Amino acid sequence: MQETSLDSYDSFISQLWSYTEESIKSVDPITHQRNVARSLHNSISNFTSKSIQTTKSTIVLNTQQYTQSTNNEILQVLDQFGFAFLHNLFSGTISSSCSSQESTLTQYLHTQILLFINAGWPPTFIYSNPILWQLYTQLHHSLINSHIHSNLTPLYDILAWYVHPNPSSISRNRFVTAGGFTPHRDRQLLTPESIQNSFYQSTNACSAPKYITVWYAISHASSNNSVLTFLPKTHDDGYLNGDLMRHTNDESVTPAESSNTIELLRVTRVKSNAIESMRTFDACANDGAIFTHRTLHWGSCNGFSGLLRSKQNEVDARVAVSFTFSDETFERVYVKKENCEKNEWRIGLVAGQMLKYYERFDKMSVSDVMLLWRVFEVEMEQFEDGYVGSVREETVAALNAMRSRVKD
Image (cartoon, rainbow, N blue to C red; front, side, top):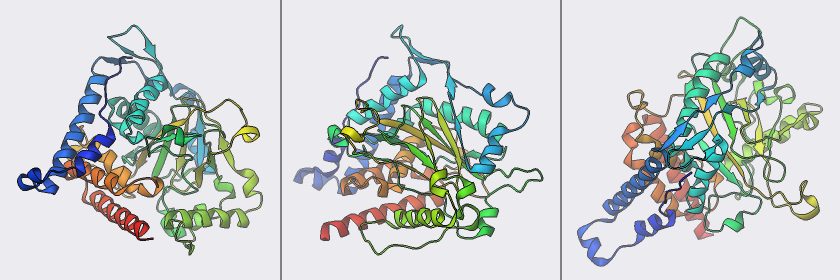
């Protein structure tokens, strides 16, 4: 594949804060920041256009493996356990008219995400690539609507991960992490009634969830580079009964981490054999996991070396993306309906998502937050008011947290 250049993320950070006295007289700082954000937006758009314009894709979702059985096996497993593992999700190749070389989907995505990583960008900016949205559409129509429920639509709560066994080796990118997310449910609900309402009430034996996540592995995932782990519904007292919301007094732990970790500790005490029942997903590239909003899951941390590594020479990063789907009655789509067919909002969405999940990226700075907010602001009118409000709230929380950190 022919690579195209991508401007450095840090160069935009420098532009955001570098003023001369002359420029301040002619352009106020807010206007300057918005101009930088627009420049960043255009830089990503141009990069994506150049990298995709000569690309031909024959990628299709391998639905045959799920349609051969007469019953709906995926929904049955989801209803019983809260998650399912899907193998060899997509087939086909991606080729460039500039080269005779063909790539598999995961090879192509891995190459593209590395361009962002090497330029210091958050890996979630891979969603500026139209190929990801083709996958989103195929998953929606051929997997979610066909096998889970026809009322589920893309929510756009997206995120990408680049988890490296030795993140310090990629020093210029502060968005590379040493482990996956701590134990959590994608949506916390406090009462059995609210949980019951978050599932479709069915006359048959299976109840489909009103919120679903598909996690897709671009690389292999193992205990050496962060493996995804799930607690089955059968051994999770809080899955249907509600979450116990208690927070620790440890100020170094965020409320989200605290409540979810306490929930995991609580349910493993309530249910016998809960710890033994946990399932790890040793995924190959092109595998996926599908799970509901109530499933407790997490990514393991790295930092182990020598005799603690299951494979001595395995040091590759764990690269993955996620796709979410929701019923409008449970959670509204982030993008206004009249704008869903457009493409301009995708970069703004990525910036918004990074702000929403700022707690998960502890090396983010005030400069990062301000730049991401300005980028989000460029396309703010494309989004639903509720989503704009949540991003604004998290942005303020991020800046307050960073201010407190400086004071300490």
